[in-house]
Amino acid sequence: MTHSTEVKRADRKAYKPGRIAIIIGATIIAVVLLAAILAPWIAPHDPYVQSMLARFRPPSAEYWLGTDRFGRDTFSRILYGLRITLWTAAASTALAMVGGTAIGILSGYCGGRVDRWLSAANDLLMSFPQMVAGIIIVALLGPGVTNLIIAIAITAFPAFYRMARSAALALRDRDYIDACRVLGYSDTRIVARHILPETMDDMIIIATLWLATAVRTESSLAFIGLGAPPPAATLGGLVREGFDNLLDYPGLAIWPSLAILVVMIGLNLMGDGLRDANDPRASA
Image (cartoon, rainbow, N blue to C red):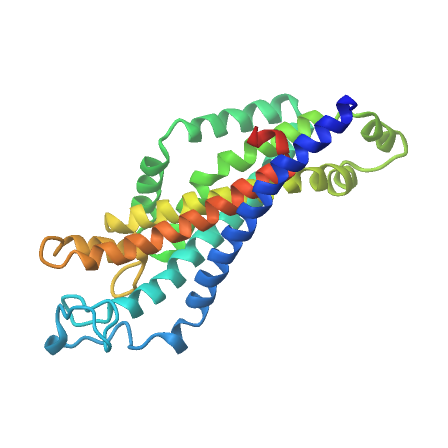
């Protein structure tokens, strides 16, 4: 048996668990997304209608997960909370991916003073703990979903910037890139046709992994009151509301916490599976 055959077999063994992780993670996220998208049609109650006669109802046929202190249906609020939480995570990740990739490639491809200044700015941003940076940015911009998306995107920017910069640094001096310059290709054309496509696989993997972090960050900021303002339902906000009555009605905090956990498990499985499938040796 040759060495190359052994390597191929080892790669196939590593790829299979990655493929399974992708399937399981994608299935979880597909179900969650479907529930969030169809929330207006499948929610048994209006998540914002209050009823003082239905306060703190236990789980029942009418209220599947019980009600909160205002008599609002917990299950319906979780469905609607998924919509805001997933939208915030997806939008912030997409924004960070576009900005971080573009500026990272610019930094790595140009080099010199541009690279030094941009790298210094990125290092400065990375010096702040993620949650601290998020709190500061939301405090400066004010509460609201849009500002929350911007804040999370800024905290995610360094991950995409570093990967894109590293890829551009590794590619800019390749022989085929030099050949493109000799042929008179513009820098814009070289980046668009040769460097950007080479970075996309890694960017997608980072984005999938970062989605779970974005969900956690959004939930954490909402938990401390820096998320979407009331009466909007977010998963982190529901957990915070549940903590006000944790001893008497623990389900109000447990159910949205479980929803956050399920979403993060699905996203992490997808991200890990994509990473292992792209580089089987990473799972070794």
